[in-house]
Length: 483
Image 1 (cartoon, helix red, strand yellow):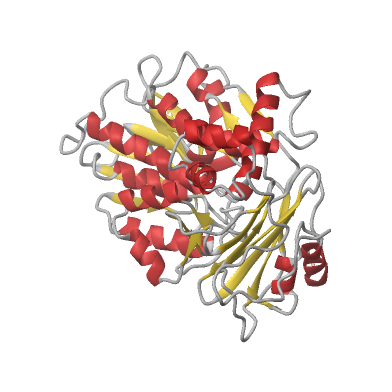
Image 2: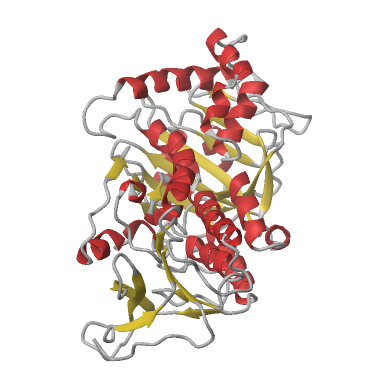
């Protein structure tokens, strides 16, 4: 290790590891409360909205849910207007969607839920541009963390070991050096090495819970067909254990469609254009296939297969080093089919921001001792809200978890199955379901008396087997549910 230990001048200093959305949000949360924030990113950022290797799901469909919009706007005031001006599309849910849940087609109605749809490249670039405007934030690109630096006292982290990319070195990386900090935040995602770093300092490794439905994606961007008219903007066909294939068509900037199809249980969709379109024809409805059958692909078909739900239970550890915090996918990573990762990252960053406000750090530049440890449970509650949907839903697929489902999970699944049938025609139940999906309300919202009564009573009307249309613009040729 080279002797390059350093401490930035000017008072308190926080280091955020990982420059994806979780790290960008954490840096924004810290900026008003410390004198300097250093954001460490392993890759080099592109100068424009463009794909980069450090975001594994960047080529695939992204929806910004309600809680994600709320969190990003709180951390970066004015960002949502920026995103709309840059071309992200507002999709009212379910009014602008053809939505098929496990229980069938959901009736379309005017509700309060709005999804912002666009490419991840555009979203990341817009957030990075906002972060650059914040005072006291510096970014070290092509730099990675390789370990934590223990403090002089018991149970304290005092910095991080970094190394920079060096093309002349045999390994491609330079020698590690120390960077001191008053707080280190790990936002390095699914591949976080925090468990190994903690073990190296003598701490126990956190328990992990994994639910893996064997989901694999394929995604392609299409030019919208000339003359296309429809009363919908988005198509979402969810899978079931009996029909374990799903698909989504999202409008994105520059009048394009980003389309993803997925197989569960270990099946991987084809990565050629003809095979991709043919796979879309095999979904629970052919409506998505009909939309893209004659559409022009604008690039390659890209695949992704690491989609397991994985959470690390840092909140259960009885020993924890002060001045160290983990958030984002490094704590809880979800099947991207549910679109919750960005929202959980933003919600977790807001937990950090509010805790700093409550601690009275603004203007003092001091992070109090014992600050980080209690935040683990508050961040875990952000993960809980999303896990109730994604983790529990994927438990329904064979082999997703070791051994048979516990009784509570089986009862929960029976209730959820019934809820998804009732939600197709009951607006009160559907609204509660969307509140939970958007992480705008705790999972208990689907157990409110009115919702519970409707679910226990069952569907008043049989779910329609046909695509739900609204308004005069609905094309008459849209297909019915696949037999």
